[in-house]
Image (cartoon, rainbow over all chains, first blue to last red; front, top):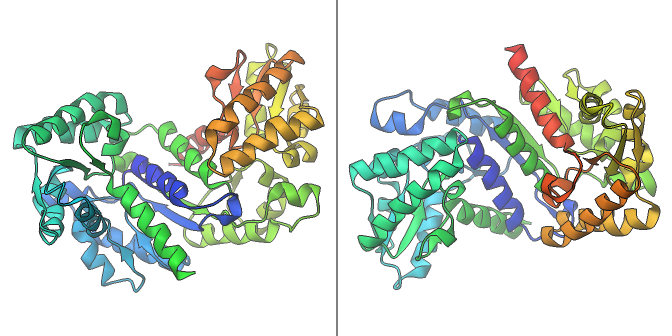
Length: 222
Length: 222
């Protein structure tokens, strides 16, 4: 979906792979289709449904030989159950895996702050998976969500990464002040603007969790 | 080929695209196959020929819908004429495009220094394309080539980027002392270890030239 996030995810996958030379790395096929209809618009304002394009992409990858799928877009996960029904290769679920990872940090972390698109937030993706682990999720109030989260996410998608950082730091700090013991970068654009060094609590990057999970599963299947 | 270089090239392509939102970016299919036999070994020590794997990759991408191919690996260009014969979609030639770009810098630049794999160097890829533009190429002596160029390239392929930088700076400085008026990063791993700020003459990144050329051609075809 977001091409910057796709490039960033692939780099995370490369770095998560134990390899000393090219030939030890994984064979990866990437279908980067930024033209897929906006996921947040579909969830909030009845914009075009991205599901058919997601299914077409999954089928394209399977037809070209893919044995496992990963989708490094949080908001797209609201549509993935429908995609999984249409392809018979496993989709590694980024949000489920992140919830399992956060659970490892409890009881130190019992409340997490979520920086995500408004689509991911309203679809309750992290809330539903983290509830199962007994961890609660706090999100920015509507005005902060728009001005301090969606604005920098759109800036990153437009290539203006420097603008994004102070806004995302302010959003994270607001969540920490409200009791968040960790921050989830719940949109794959967020780590392009905010890093672990910017905040005083653990910074959880679901794209990193997804990369590590994919590598572990591939190596386990060998 | 090199997965780090593949990720870096895709990021360069994203940054070279004039786009304000996801949906304005290009649809890109990436076949990252690090298992393709080592190109330098094939050229220098009769290692396994990578041509069949390159042809298979080109066919996979075409079958999945690709209309244009780019190969962000310099050494692989020694085998691309054979690949182009087997697929009827155009392969944008990174080294030809770089030679045209360097020509724009003449007469200021009449002699360039080449930091590349020993395979690219011995195959004379840059030499043959730059000769046509009246520009000469100088390369490191054999011991410098091994210790100051191949060693850092292998380090980058193994994920040890920090080790690479001082060695590549020393190699570039040696070429500048020998009269190079610009440095070509003639292996796509090199820009991961050396940047324009590290050297006092123009730093030419063929992956950047390839990215800009691909975007220009796609937009011209629309």
